[in-house]
Image (tube, rainbow, N blue to C red; front, top):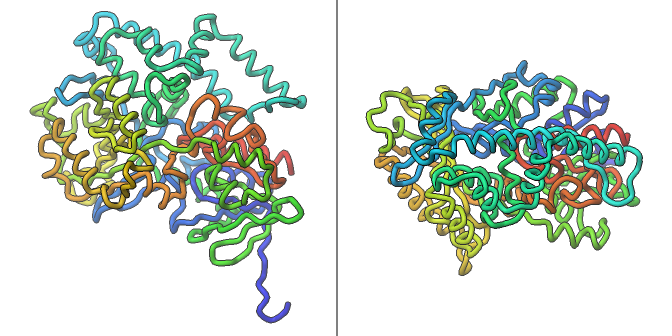
Length: 536
């Protein structure tokens, strides 16, 4: 070798990004006999599923913070429980407005019936019927999550079989459920909500179900799909259950990393990829930000579609029409994340004289004034103005997992605040207005927890711009692309990349920008690995 020459390493597949989908892909590829290297830009593995100390003595799932959608097949195949994955059920759900009116739902059917009866004589029965339809439709969608979508246009035998299977699954639904399925796909949430429910309080609860993975008003056709997330998920065989993970969400990706390393996968942190290399029209590896080159005949990108195709690969390697479509792919979730370090358990004014953690503390908590609040927040954000007040989804995971804080009696609280725009009006910068927005959020919480500002000993706030900077998510989109009908299934992110392969031979998508989309599911990584192994 000539003096000064650099050795080029060789792997079968390089995975860009050690988020949960990238680690899932690497795991399955290694089990299929490949030599795999995972490259992570940050100093820790996990992507958005990480546990970090955000204030001295306080740890939390700082980005993604709840688990339900992680596919049981992935948990089983990768032996995640053996490597430390332990979900903890969130049994309760609280929906509350600033007047103190609330629905607190638990596992007790009689209790729940009484909660609904505060607001309506009919909505409890309606909600049970609604949930039955959602479960039936959700079952159909869940079957598609670990399937490669059939191609649009000309179809081969495997694509035709996939289409027929989907058609048969739809046919097995009863007539009303087929109608409801179409409503979820193309109908507006407000139409569905008004069809089923009478009480404004119950309507606001159901409206809140579209909020976490969406950026849409209630009158937008197709925005109802997010309601089905509650039906697709499960924990420990409990359908529709949600929870937290002991040790935080980082326990998931740590388990995945340990499982992958046991299969021989090499994982490198502080290894940002600067470029996906192409030779003679095919992928030939990657070049790192430090200039080091790693050769591989396959690259699986866990980065979002815009970053993968337009930044890492480059438009010059892609058909012109494909590039135009990817540039038009809608990426924004208008999400702001906060983590609060608390000196004690919050006292909610709606639940006086609570001794120790109550059912409302051990719940998913949604602060929402009514269905109109969601529309107001959306239209404010679309104008470039952070919603004030935002809709807030919160949990206090330390009530279930005491190991998140060092000091006894102290707690951590997670907040997802929506809608918060990436681009602000009047040329303002998130770096400048973030302190004021944090103060507004805490001020709103005072209507529920009067001394919240006194018990906050530290906080972490991540705006959409921060999410882009830290995680590399274009426009801070936690789902790698909005979950809307024309950006799902065999159109996600484009018909020519919806089966995980792309127009450049050897380049595959394995992240949330591919089917079935966002959330900690492992499904895109599972499907991408199967496609790569089949192609190879």
